[in-house]
Image (cartoon, rainbow, N blue to C red; front, side, top):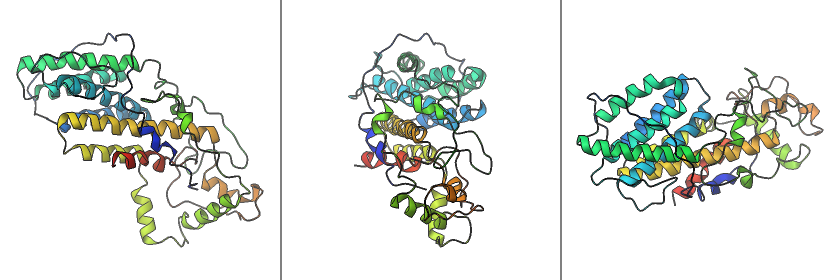
Length: 360
């Protein structure tokens, strides 16, 4: 049941970009051989490598939320690289390396993403080198400009990676999860009864602020409260697969928002950036993608703090919650398959909230 105090991470965007960080220099270096390729310029360069991170994460394979953190690191590295080459007025995330006049910002962005990819997906070196080979060969600039951009991109990527050392993005998947039971407590849900999704995410260091618990909302309503009772009975009707008063429009709206919140909002960010120049797009995507990730981290902190049960569990066990107004339905099935993480707070509204500020 989508309890209604779940937009708390809207404020995560405020502190996101760009607090200065520092750390020891990383030693990653190197480039793949270059052969001719098709040209990508402007925001297309950024999106090309962001999509490559999505594909690399799926091929490992790893959970998409872990890949989201890695993609955020790449976005920040690309921004710092482009900001340095174009001598942008913006505060960097980790560094603003010195750049030779005339260096290619596209080459800098590509190489920054490449260095991050090698660090994040060490078993996919051949795939990454092949992608880099094609990508850098298509840069519409002189060999000298490309070489100068590569130098900046490498320095920018290494500074971001150094700033993220020890950020817990590689922690075990189930870190922080203790199975529970009883009224109000999340347990694996049908039909897969899968392990919870990425509880480790609650421990990942946010981008630009210190502690996700600062955005943690109050606990969900007590099971015998009026608010819980209203939510329970509303979801029991509107959320069920069949025999519901849900309208066709409500069904269509639910289906529209049913994909991953991080995927939906990351796509929106990239779509908006498509009409910008490279520097503006690099900054906008860095802020937007980091906002998605920061909101997820804060949301997961709350989800795994409260471990609140899902409607499919609550409604089938309505006779165990101590509330005489929540009649159980042992056969209740939701309209959309339940995601494998605790109910409260809602990820979609948490992740979407920062974009009201971006739109101002």
